[in-house]
Length: 606
Ligand SMILES: Cc1ncc(C[n+]2csc(CCOP(=O)(O)OP(=O)(O)O)c2C)c(N)n1
Image 1 (cartoon, rainbow, N blue to C red):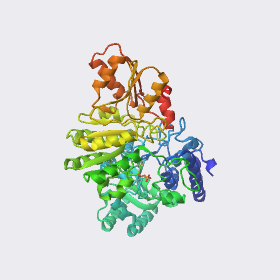
Image 2: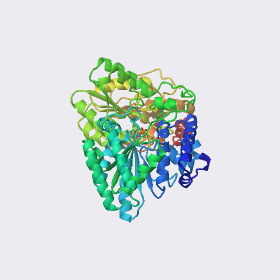
Image 3: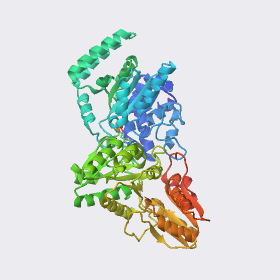
Image 4: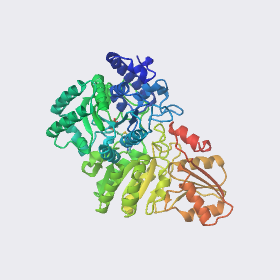
């Protein structure tokens, strides 16, 4: 069946039984591909029937489907002509793991960061109306992504807009870990409202018995529906903000899904279809451990075990050290935006369940909430991936830095992250944080320096950013020396007269390698702090060697290279030879970390 599907048109020719068979084949295929390449498994297995139903009822690319986060778009990619390309998903020059408008006209909007779909879809619906067109616009959003502020802002706007659009709430009760928060509790009540489900079925029957639904009929039905619902569910959030709520519906029943989606097309204004799915559906090991199989490296299908054993990484080193500090300092608390496991906080949550706060996929709120705690005497530690810190920029400026509050902002996955591609690369944080007054910005060269940086930050009583990469330290370079950390002080790893190499973070080990390769008398400086920058030591070294190389895993704009250039100009240092290794001013696509660092930084370094 799968071999016959080259576009949604092929899918539309199938009968229900054939679609059910196709669903099983798609599941098997995705499982095989992800087991080989790694990727987002559980979310994709959960939306197989939903995606089939969407492409059966709607006409892409005329109709627009915006996939929130976009990690669950593999089935959509298969159905929209990228079945064979899926074999190279997330690989260098292969298709992306997220929707990309450049990749296919069926991908109507790029996603990657959570909670954007309703805003984008509303924008598309408004543009459609202004153009006088009649296509459908659909946002598919998970219950996890619905916890993000943007999604709620968009619901608020869409609800009062009268714009015809469909929001599909793909509710599997999971974010990466089990979903959290009041909204999730509210959804819990909806999920189990059997009476409501029955009532809804009656209404569905009434509507579908009308051959062409006239305006007044729909309005009347909607009014009845609303009245009944108000009786059944006291605080019907979606209806209250202006959506027509349909569901809940079994998200693995293609027939029911098609029927409710068809209904959603007929109702005017914004509609929310509540779809209940199982994350990891059809692969028992993932059904039991949906968080482990949310995003997974290559694994053995029979056992579910990763093919490569997980080695110690920066997130784990961070998490373990934080536990140690927290034992002796009860002011330390941890805040996570739905990324407890990814950021290394699992142990912390076991040892200090009352001192960790999972706020949902809400980075902005996480930072301001942490600022509030800091204001009242706590020391909040907030690990967030570099690319997701972009979300919380104003909160870092307005709530943390401006009040000089001691929030420790740990920037995990800094630099190239690899297969997740351009939306997830962490190459911009040094540049955007450097602009912010009061921030201390650090990047450790290895695990031990991360531990020392954390200790330093806990005692500093100022806002501190500590950035560290995905994965582990460079196994080939072992740093024996770890000088005590002092604010704004770099570390000279090797003295020399002919060339100065200044590097920061992960790239310090590359500096050691390149110094060996070049030979001669090389001075190697571990910058440690991007801000405050050790002007004194660097200036002294440059005056001596008159030749400098900077190395960083960030963009060439406003990072280490810019800092050193500014130092040269501001101090009127003459005749300095300058070379920098930094990422170009572009969005960097997917591939492995090694391939991309090689390609985008420079092969000389490796
Ligand atoms: C702004 C932002 N923060 C964090 C993430 C990481 N992330 C990716 S998917 C996900 C969970 C999404 O849960 P849900 O929307 O329910 O989708 P599901 O995977 O359960 O289908 C998270 C936290 C992200 N993509 N964007």
